[in-house]
Image (cartoon, rainbow, N blue to C red; front, side, top):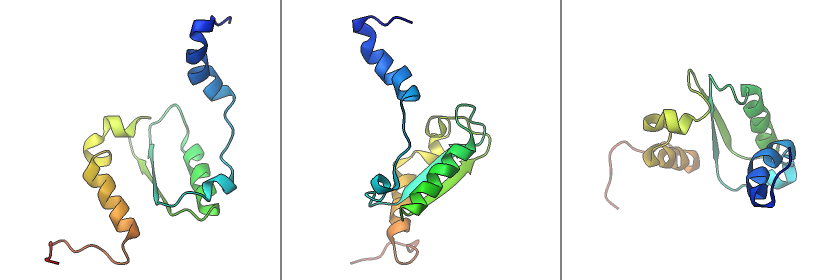
Length: 112
């Protein structure tokens, strides 16, 4: 297919993104300093769960704190189709805080 110069950005963000992608190196992944939560839709037809499992393994090899959850019945865009459970700020904040807390958070607030 011939791409017009004006269409080059579309080609770069679609075709080139898929065809010229390279895996992340462990060296690059070692730079990650925060916990990672991978969500994979169990009914995703775009990417098989093995892709996410492979990425999880690379993150673990790079000593990154990673957790992976497969959301049964969810398609590719879990955060769009299941936002009430997986894409709310409170869900993500709670995951981050609990991942970085030496002990479980108390359910009741307390005064400082």
